[in-house]
Length: 276
Image 1: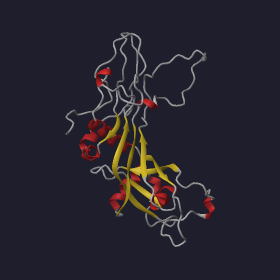
Image 2: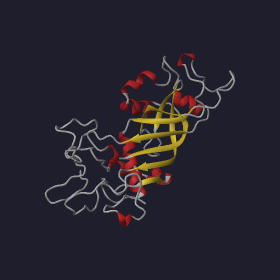
Image 3: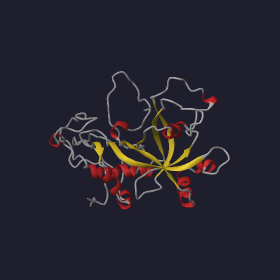
């Protein structure tokens, strides 16, 4: 199935006609019946395109792994904890999530490419047999021109918001899979350093740390597109993730890619909704 529309946005097809907007009826799950929602909830394939767009535009992600139950013998081929790391002795089985550089350097497959520093905790855990996931969230480059409004009876002045948009209403997702080595090439180096110029100092063959290219081979996609009464929340079939084309990703827009977008708004006519 391929999407026929030239541009996907997170726009509802209809808006509430009431003069006073009601809060989202479903935040972290979809309604049991889509008829319960005033908005058109995107399909899993439309959500896959949006997720691939997020991957294309997002250079940072959180790699989650689990500390191994045993470091093994001194003869183990797995990287051993550094003595300067001061690792506690009771971490076995504990999860840890750490930021890492990623890049969409294999857009045909949808497998993100990572420059693995072998001494880093995420890659030591993965080498020791840990499962691994990569979590991403969409961060709009521009704040909305119109914000979700709320009245705070305890505030007498306008306070600066810590986050200038509703992060709960924006896409985020997690990719589950495994790491696979990628052969070094000039094209790969160029692609990755376009997103991360400082990474040139720890490319494979550098004098600082042993490093190598890896791809996260995607085997599962869990997606939260926003509030559940207007965005899909759930698993995206991996075949749909892989079938998304470069052209579809290029024609898609996410909220905040351009200036002038709005979150929910209540105007003089009582219309409430999301718009770009």
